[in-house]
Image (tube, rainbow, N blue to C red):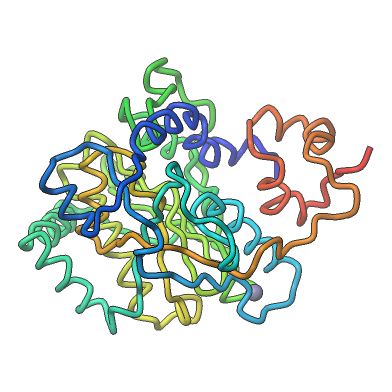
Length: 344
Ligand SMILES: [Zn+2]
């Protein structure tokens, strides 16, 4: 498959990384707040959060879980790349940098089932989030699994429906650029391994004989960790409760633990506290994310082929370069399976 077809969804959130970096640098001020959430609530700060990571409870990421095949190692490596700024390797690494963002994790072992999770969210929000999700249901929104590459146009519209997102200003929204690709839906693929996979989730509404996607998220699992990526709803429809509906559907699937692909998960990971506004921080607090010191012993689990050079890979695969995708990530997710060239 051509990189262009699915690149939009993939790259959208990474374009504004420079803005995010500046915000994060300003935000991460080193201090020793023992009760970070209380500190946030009390001071009504927008993005400032800081703590001594050594004071946080640990989260032990085990990305391989005994799996030996190469495709699985590629999924694990992707998560290593995605989380490397949050996760320390082994215990010896310095974990004290003032500017290291603080990972947010749901410890899934806290919740025997989804009812326990919903009760915790209910206590935190006084039932507001549940009512909001119910409103979305009443309005006719429904959630289902999708192939992550499906609905590129809807994805672009959702993404550019807000001027500012958690990683900074949205260039597409500022420039009011028109969508380049049409919505397509790909059939769901069988997962070759239940411990290593990537899956998409979408919220849909049927209007005027057409089905439209209005919120979406990508879940990526490696071992005992599932990361939630590109979680976003259409800016005009947030009042309908579409993001709550989506989050609860995902958590229900994870915590029901009926699907073999959801079994054995211990942590749900989503970005850092320093990402985004106070609103986003509150959202994560209410949905049971907690700051954790993440550790892993699985580093460099994937061996890139002999002579692999990211720059050469981009030269030989101009569509990847044009799409602006990180070459290593592209190779792990697609290039490996597609047999893309990497040697001159
Ligand atoms: Zn596997």
